[in-house]
Image (cartoon, rainbow, N blue to C red; front, top):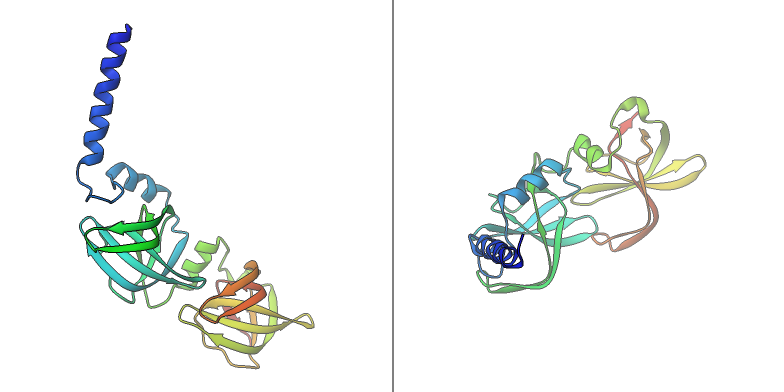
Length: 218
């Protein structure tokens, strides 16, 4: 292939690429194309989720302020008919700093452009959904731990439970559940988070175990 032909093909490719980038997306927004959506949808395990605090529709994007246990964050996803109070699950994406949306005339200090998002049914994430997100089993046969409830702290997404365990105390976090002091519960191993800070409680836990379910045994 001669250098002239090579340069011509390169120029054509660049022209095509520029045309594809400029088509469809609002000015100032990262491009959302079908290939990206398909890729993210196929791979999406939706590792993130939370409750919608604010929702704004703007062109091809929906901006959502998501309340998560560790704090809130803004995300932008391809148009989603979301409303305040919806529980949203979403994939990873690209984090942008000081992003200015011309359509909203607003600058976001940080915003995550996520490749895929969907709804989680119900007011709070279900036990099974939380188990899936944490990649742990919700099978009652694997609830190998048992303890007595010493105290509980409810939040919008989780209930924090202080339990006695083998003569010591430990903290658990489980999707909202009603328990009372003195209940004997069984629970699985879950996922241990060290030095975990809960923004909603303004409290740091040396270790908290995020689990999918608890069972009251007496």
